[in-house]
Length: 194
Image 1 (cartoon, rainbow, N blue to C red):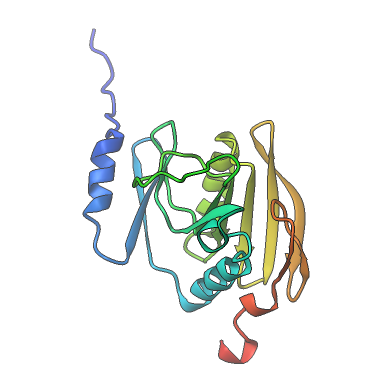
Image 2: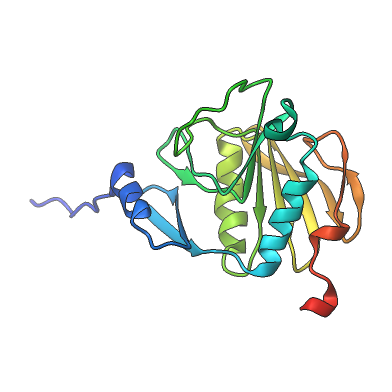
């Protein structure tokens, strides 16, 4: 009696080696065991939101202020179960991680992640990354939609993402986990620039 053929799942180091060989402008992630996902660099609308979201956090960015949060843009993070994520923006509380290691990929799970949705990544960001972040106890995740001009704030509870707040258009409000109001008006591409 013969056994059914087993599908071999490539190990993390093999997939990561493929990621390192991707052409410039292409990012790779491992969101599921043995599956390499690639994406190209974001469009202007996406990049603008990333720039202004990061700028909105300048008062808590430890690289600028010496306290608050370590804020990194598109940094590779290896999760304990051999997954590799590249959040658009991620943050680590300085009180938890006084010195952020000089390693790539980082092996310290962030406290907060922000994903900027685009037509090519929105489905994976919502159905793969959001639950993956919650399963790894990343406390907070923002899903930012430049087309709808919205920010959805999710808090992890019992390993699940729970929508706890939303902001839209030109709102200026406190968005967890940060303690100061964040003004959204500048994040969005003006209608006449579309």
